[in-house]
Image (cartoon, rainbow, N blue to C red; front, side):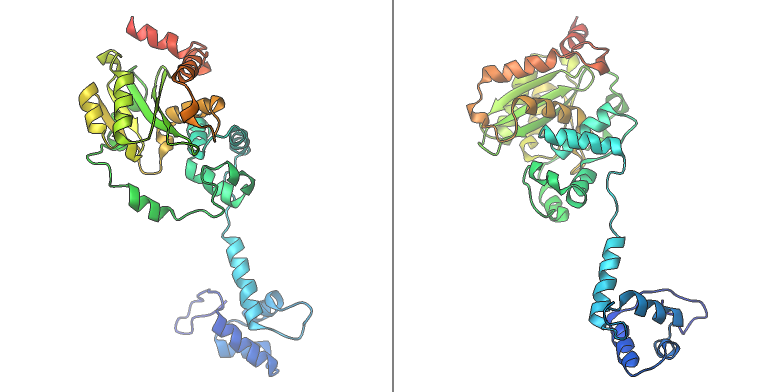
Length: 330
């Protein structure tokens, strides 16, 4: 480690390429380690450690600065690698849900919703996949071999939806699921066609409504949501929380038509509406990835919706979402 000659205290820092070049020159000329240390103004143990750690083993009497720098850089890179998702239970759930073709957002939302004692987010899952579990890369929607730059993508999306109210301003009565009138909205897409699904889910009863649209435009999404919710009593539709997808750009028209307040998750925090992400994962059991949604009939969409709403849920005391929601309307 280098020593700052202008200060009485030792300041520890890594040797650089220039210093390693000097070590090689003086060492080849037969200078002693303490002499080299004095020339470089470092502690003699720094030179001793450098020669032991970064020399090529088969050339015990020779020191190559470029090779030494390469070894040092490699060691530094490896030391910075952190183990992602240390909890074995979370790893087990991630593995299970990837096999069911869930997305990282859906997995994170499911974990945070169903396992209060555990916590993760989709960004940690992405990092886990790209650093520790690359066998799951083909399960990702775009399956990039390398993680793309998030900062560039964030700059493209953040400001294109006007007049958003962020989830940080959402009242606690919604956050704590104290009433049967708050919904979450999302879309499920297919790479095989432009058609997609619009999904809304009531946070407390877990009731799900699904509608197919021919293309994921803001207008089509708005029409689908209004159509699904207009027959619900006004007292049971007070808010909807979306992510920042551009298909929700007409949220103000949705709010006006339905008399609801709209809220938006923080950018790339889809897990903040984990309930509908979980519903999307259940839908994927019927419509796996690579399904061509344009070939799926509206009747089959209604069948899926009916199946989900009539499944007993442990979190509902083994009642179904339909049973719980109907009790609110009576």
